[in-house]
Image (tube, rainbow, N blue to C red):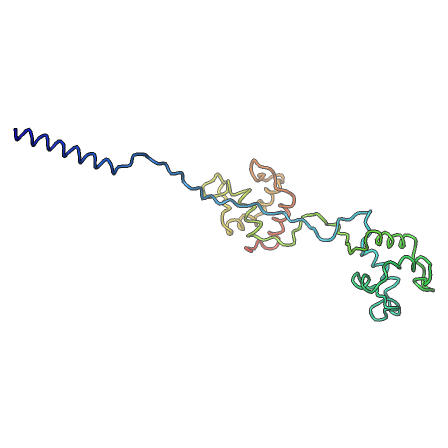
Amino acid sequence: MRRSFFFVGSMLIAMWLSNEACKHQPQDIVLVTPVDTTVVVKPPVDKLDSTGWKCSADTAYYADVQAILTANCAMSGCHDVTSHASGIIYTDFTNTKTYGKVSKIIGEVSGNKPNMPPAPRPALTASQIALIQKWINQGALNKTCNPSFGSCDTTTVKFADYVSPLITNSCKGCHNPNGSNGGINLTTYAEIKAVATLPKFMGSIKHLSGFSAMPKGGAMLSDCQIKKLQRWINLGALNN
């Protein structure tokens, strides 16, 4: 009897301990999705030349008007800064707008009194008068015709903000230590400079005959991108 009681008691204690142990075991397996730490490199911005205005035959540009004023009005004894006859100055845009009589220019140069330029200087031609009139009609603005307006601006090309992002987005997918790169790595500045200064680099970028076109299997870089890469190389391929 005592043995039976002891056996049953031991079994109950063992079952109780087993249940208690189970209470501290996780009931569900939680799968944690790894965080994507990939750094997304923004593509470089191709800055276009936006100085001045796009040249147009329909626009009167102040530089052309000033050339007429300089040759016929803004000289010593007349409307230069020193003489400023009648308080009028036609030496540049600021003085023309501040001390000039823009609204009266046409009347003065068209033969109305006082006739300008004064004799014995020749009168302005019809085309010169028409240009000044057109400039006034368009608001007498300080517009400059820029033949390069909208073209690729290669004035400043820096490695950090242009070349490196361009290489990362266009070349590094293959040319990295783990890629199928033909033995060429373009990861660090030193690696990029070492390759970029070789003739085959721009030959491949420009898809020239006899070179392996790059990016391989991708579209050719834009004309502006190629010009900027070439400009960076020509300036010494600096780490700037």
